[in-house]
Amino acid sequence: MIGSNRPHDRKKQLGAFYTPRPIAAKLAEWCIRSPRDRVMDPSFGGFVFLELARQRLEALGAAQSELSGLIYGIDSDPAAVLLARATPSLKETTIIGSDFFSLDPMDLPKFSVNIGNPPYVRYQNWDADESAAHAIAAGMGFKLSRLASLWAPFILHGCRFLEIGARLGQVLPAELLHAQYARPVIEYLVTSFQSVTVVVFEDRIFPGALEEVVLLFADGYGEGPASGIGLINCRDIDGLDICAIDGIGRGQFSSDMALLRAIPDDCQRIFERLALDPRVKRLADIAEVDIGAVTGANSFFLRTRAEIRQRKLLPSLFRTTVSKASDLAGARLTDGDIHRLSALGKRTELLVTASHSKDEIATVAELLDEGAKLGLPSRYKCRIRTPWWSVPLPRKGVPDAFLTYMSDAFPRMVCNDAKALSTNTIHNVAMRDGHSAAALAVGFYNSLTLLSAEIVGRSYGGGILKLEPTEAERMLIPSIDLGIQVHLAEIDSRLRVGDLDGVLNIVDPLVLGTLGLNEGDLSALRAARASLRARRRSRSKRPAE
Image (cartoon, rainbow, N blue to C red):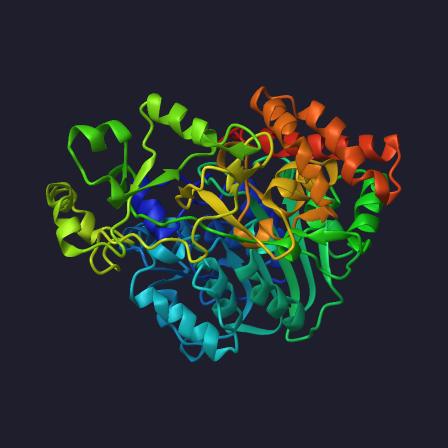
């Protein structure tokens, strides 16, 4: 790996996690086919792609005198630009110190290859001038979600610099395959290129990044559309044979395909059959999933009940709230759970000033002054509110149930008997008419639904399963009879002591028994879930740097 001298927070701001050389070498070998190929890296960072592009061109027969004008590197970080210009091996490389989105395709020659690792900066960390990325995407006919990371418009803009027949090779977050905002990028790639292949890995291959990464190989720009997207599963980068990329079979793309193909064929067939069964719904059919309250500073806005009593704060200004997955012990959240958390000194009370009078808010003036001294009015989310301390409540109000956003062993669906709120670390679930939160909090714990959670979700840092609301709503839910809620107390008790197997033994026959599944089928679903869980957990191990 090319080392970075940037502090971690600076790297995070720039989206800069530099690519290990073995990964970059695979992309360079596949993308560059001719000693006359003109190559660009629009965010070169540690310039490993620029060095490997030179080596690849020379290996294909390019003389040193012919390299000038063949390799272009662009980066917005002045330190990276200065270092690249001072590096002897990049003497013939054209180095451009610029924000990539400020460049127009007319400013540069057309390229045979666009190769690199674009910034992964989240939308809330974008600089004001970087928001021009959305304008460029819109000009190409794409309206990107405000949740999009910077890599998405980076890919779209980068394709504008390519010549007909060019190749694109990129290191991208696995969000390419999962995130709703990535769909315009997928559609553009399939429409614009003759072939598109994505490589996913069982092991974590990228040091320093919390997100999983995939490799994108696209060939034949301007010669599309592709017949579909090829998906290749590899254990690690050493197991990737780039000769196989051009021959991989392609089919209709589904964002769930990558993980679905990682389970045994017999279980794939069971899963796909059930997904088409009219008795099996998506969670979105019976409930709406949304984020909880966004405070911008949980440590300030959440207070303990003891502090509220001691400081004689007005109790009506606070709402009972859960903020951690560990607050949800079973299949339901009760008043008793809240009292237990409070007795442990947990912050269970959220400051909510909406609909309260000025006189009432004045009773917490001292508390608000403390927040101002901490600099909260200028913190993201606080600074976009007027006043900064007015935390907006979820649009659906008190949720019927909660769903864990980040999960280790498995996601939890919890009936909200306590009528509590949650912060955005826990999802809110609002039941649609005719459906029961108590029944869902029982029926959710079946082998099919828990397997589908592993498939539609994504692995995050430390092997945690992360479910965004739109991903959660794609989970498969068998038809659940309202009468199943009579089992809530037993399911709740078993979950509190970690007895998931016991829960599945109760719930599977109740909700999957009518779908024609035998014991072998149920065992296959359970084994597949365990395999995908072990797969994401194994990725929490840091690779050798």
